[in-house]
Image (cartoon, rainbow, N blue to C red):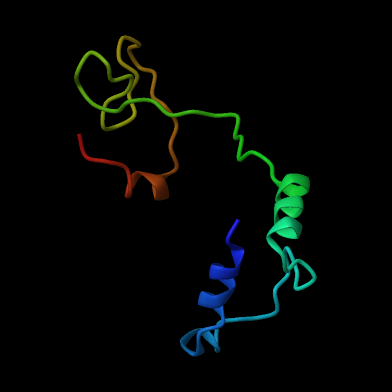
Length: 90
């Protein structure tokens, strides 16, 4: 582990106004061995119980550009209006 590189970058003068105190892993972790142990004890997955589906008009797409489910007349995948602005154009 080379967390020291991240610390070196964060202590550049250009970042002075943005940098606060190190919260995690904390200044007590200095050696690669200490940092390895910290990662082993605190790492976790970014599991999120959802997925995504292909949007488009080809046979692999599940919904069209408006969120309408292919093959299900009148059924649309719900999407907040604010999210639609950033959804891809198909």
